[in-house]
Image (cartoon, rainbow, N blue to C red; front, top):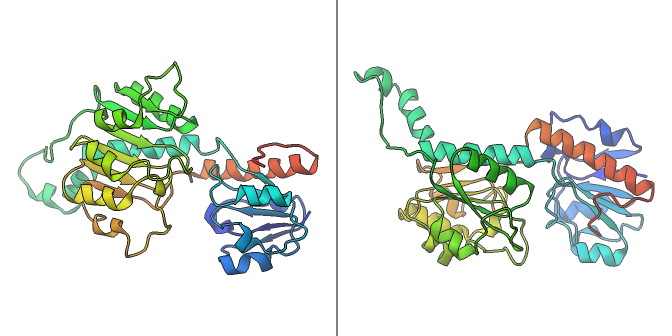
Amino acid sequence: MKTVFLDAATLGDDIDLSPVTSMGETVIYSHTSPAQVSQRIGDAETVIINKVKLNRDTVGEAPNLKLICIAATGCDNVDLEYMKRRGVAVCNVSGYSTDSVAQTTLAMVLSLATHLGEYNGWVRSGSYSAGDVPNRLEPVYHEISGKTWGIVGLGNIGRRVAAAAVAMGCRVIANKRVPVPDFECADIDTLCKNADIITLHTPLTEETRGLISRERIAMMKKDAILVNVARGAVCDEAALCEAVKNGRLGAVGVDVYSQEPFPESSPYTEIMGLDNVLLTPHMAWGSFEARSRCLAEIAENIRSFEAGGTRSRLV
């Protein structure tokens, strides 16, 4: 089968693509614009994408297309209903980035809670060396032990973060579409009102789009820390940035945006220089190990499809 990878650069230049390229004829493109999709996949049987959108408007005729492999867990870049009607199989990759995203989530929360950026800046500026006091304790920071950590989305990543939060002495409350007996579950409003730390791990669906709304942000504690490593559109981004600017939230960490990369007109540009804001370029999923696992899983999905299997099939 001929395979076309439309945006290989999203997996990084350091990743060995041989798990896929060794399987047969493979064409690799670093980047592909929406206008280039139909021409590039014209005679492909398998298409691999990460961020490229595949739908009625972009795919074109593609008469040989049989399989789409998403190099991610989220499937919002592919019109699943359209592909189902066309008889095109779609596979994603789940579980490959759990440790990577959980690690980044914890790093964001701990850095913001402990003001590490500000303390590091004090030393880097030379102010510490120029002073006559052996330590600096401003801005004041607090231990997270005993705090309430709200987890929105209780999949693999949410559960891994919850386990770490418990290990650090936090009470964990979780928001899950179907509550489970092994966690203290709460509706989203209750979680927003009571959590000192809120981390988002839910997929983007019509139900979760705008879940963290202006009204729910207003419910949060004034010193709450919110970290979004889910999808940008889960939050009302304008309301979130406004709350930070106005001192209505303690700190914000964000790795995902409704438009990536976010443009100069994004509300995030107005808060990116604040000490209590940590913005990263959608990198939480992308440890070397996670990206290597992702590619290996894609290769297994292709093998399964060729053998008549349904491994990781969405449609």
